[in-house]
Length: 349
Image (cartoon, rainbow, N blue to C red; front, side):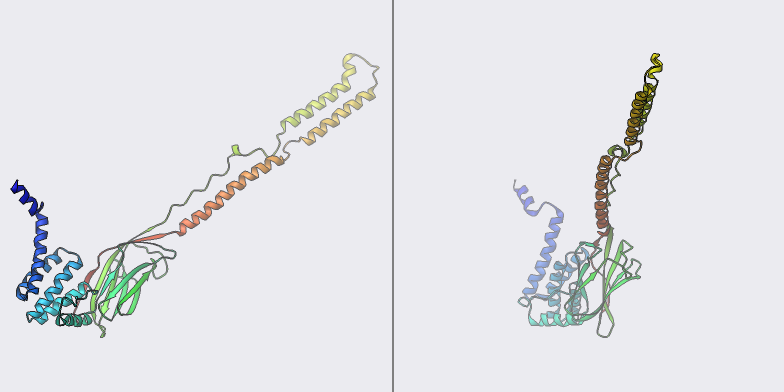
């Protein structure tokens, strides 16, 4: 039982034990510095900083080791080594400042001098950004170690220029904006660009260069298909058919002929012909009038109005979808995924 408790107390994984051991090296180096054991502090801190750098640890962890290492080197009488450590610290994080409540003026003063001479910037961008190409902008913040001149350029992957963004002085910080287009105002035609910031000394000499990769993806909503026009089954006939009028005409003509020929059919010859002709004429006129009123292909106003209402409703839906598709085609968005900034060239003054 005691063996099991001891195992739990020591930790469950070797990696955890290694992490605790590495952290203890940093703590031991800081304790040695505070105890004025500067040689031991420099040895422990240099070892720990090398481990953190190889592991690409967070910047905050590395800066803590570097500032104590620089201070230890200074009090060891190795000013040049302290300057080199502080310059490395400024290049790593231009925003860093030593705590004046922890470090004496000798350390903070030396660091401040190194910071003013070291020309570099930090690029601060969101990891993922989505901007509308119509009126949006990708924003990047530059934080300078000291007053300097910078040139900011977007490059293709092969290093050729895609679009310059800024050239000029920078004091404490500077906000840059990119609208997601090339110099001609067209949407970006590639899926990867490099954002490069070059820092220059007052003499114009290149002192440091920092860049990060931008992975790009253009997306837009799908358009909505138009509604199908009204089917024939949804529409009423707009003209009358001719079958009933023709049948009525033929029936009237037959009836008129029958009235005229009725006496002959029954064998009577003394029936006056005037009334028969009048009746036959009346039937013929009524038949002709009915045929004209119900003639084939005449317009049917009620059906035409009903069909016009159906067609108008379809046209309104088409107009609405046209406007919606126009809005969707204009709603083009650029997705930007930013990598980690990396120094591609560094040269001291």
